[in-house]
Image (cartoon, rainbow, N blue to C red; front, side, top):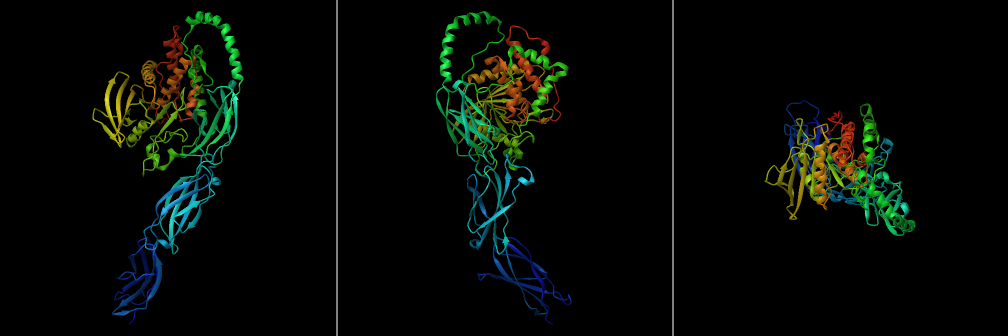
Length: 635
């Protein structure tokens, strides 16, 4: 007898290269078993095929993005059932080469390539986008923008009406016959908006101007301020506040330019002409005459007092760009320490607690990106976007511009140091790229590679004269000199493609205990003197790169010590609290523990004791300070 027809013929699943059909067996006795035949014809082409099976399910290998007509019938004992017919389509293949072609502050233009499918000219392409936010935006659910979509027949689409300085997540897929391909995704930012300069006023008798600008709409990670030939980076909190630039001349005009920075992009600069007042010229002439009249008297006075000075105060260079509020006179510093050490160092504890309560919640979006997570040793020590040190991106390597390192301000420059995380095995090459791109001649290492049985830093330099190669960079150990407390290594860094070389000296302090402080300031002060002598002799090149394990505790303590001792020598003043707070605006947790903060004061006091003919009371010196950092990432 003729079998009944199959029932419930349907498309069960599909991909861009296959389609799965299933059906229900005909009604009637199950034996002998049925044989099923499946034939198909591709729409618009002569392509066809037939498959025979004993199952009620078949997977057919087909062309992507194509429409087919399928016919299924059952056979038994040489007789065939009626046909059952169904139309079904395979999914298109994914688009390729998705990229951000251009962007403005309110739009992003995406471009991609259509898949190499036989009917790709018939595809429609869908684009979906959603805001990933920005540091200045809402963080709650109400601040999140819902998914939005658009479609096009082209391989290019401009997404408009976006927010400036904002990261967006984009998805693109192809569709035909109401069947969609898999999606391709891309993260891209809109450009930042420019600022509006609201004022530029003269100050300090015409030797300084104060520039104020409004906060632009959307996101921003830093601002660049240029007045005359001086250029400095400013944190995102600087908008709406007056920023001063000194070292100017009275009765002159200076162009002031402010540029918004975001995600490696620069907004159109805003500019204004600043006019310094002439009062300084008149006052300067009057003061000059008065100084001439009293010069002899002053000379006699200072000659008499010269032997009473506790510290030789050198003339402050003209280009001094930072002074720290709350500075303490050198002759008052011992009393300051003595007061703070009372009641189990209660004063220092209060100062350090105040530092810990300071709000430095700034954007860390680049460091937090998924592709960069493996490059961070500790999850709570991430560089801020505005002060991080970017690397030159490598083609085809997302995140290759990132390293856990920050510019740190000093006494003469807003980028006087680089504080870096100790290299991980997977970031040693990035570390040497940092050295090369910044042209830094000096490395300062304040940790051992292994401490208390834990790896604190990768051994990133050669063990012997055999060179090590990292990408295009080759590192050779030239010389090594070891003492009880430190080792000095001279290395040659060569770029194999550019055929250029850079001499690098590493100062490695080896006796700073893990999660503590040295037992005495003397070895660290001796180490600092050797380091500072080298830095004063080797002018030029990039900033010194200082690292420990996390790049905040020991690193912050040594940088603070160098800046504060130079401030002491130049001005006869010192401001540990203010400078540590200043460092923490550029990198979190600098001077990471209370013990390190107290030890910093101990070192300054010991330096004063060594420099002064009048002995400093020993009661203000703490010996064998060692605090355990209970929550610590690294000291």
